[in-house]
Image 1 (spheres, rainbow, N blue to C red):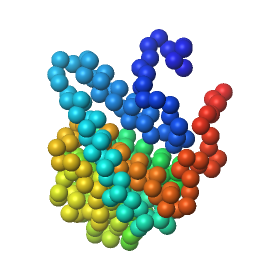
Image 2: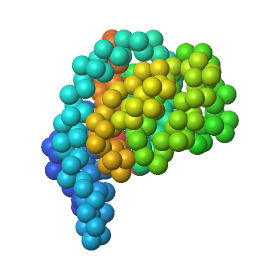
Image 3: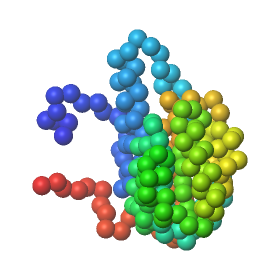
Image 4: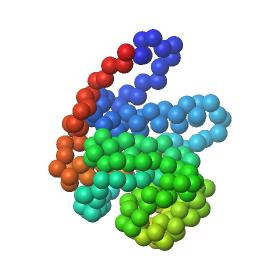
Length: 216
């Protein structure tokens, strides 16, 4: 593809060894921040993202202690809104690829319009919920999920959202919502990898998949 494109943006992150690609996702997102920075005179602060990611990687022990509860999970919903909408798709894909969990993905707004009907007692809903402009809709959804006695897991840096969630993964409070997608996806990717291990599955060798696919 690079040979036939007029312009290329190479990630320079080394070879992607995982079938369920992880650093290609975060690397490509960082390109968008760099591109946006190049196109504007305003500072967008993307230089902070690597340190936020380093902090996120330290959450492995926290995530590892949490996945045992989800060892028998077969279905779930992943929610993200605004800049974290793409993260909902990314985590859902990882859960399907590595854990064989049927994972649907929605924005918190869309989830209220019909799909909420699938939620019953202890149904797992995983939410990307940074502090910021999407907070209100995420809070509204969490309150409704509590009424339905669902199992909500939030990746958040907001204390109010954390208190409404059944359980949460606490992210640094200084992460602005604008910069949240990349550091917030890291504990989610760890969650998928560690859940696969808990289920006795090899996250590096998903069934029916190979690293190279041919499009005809």
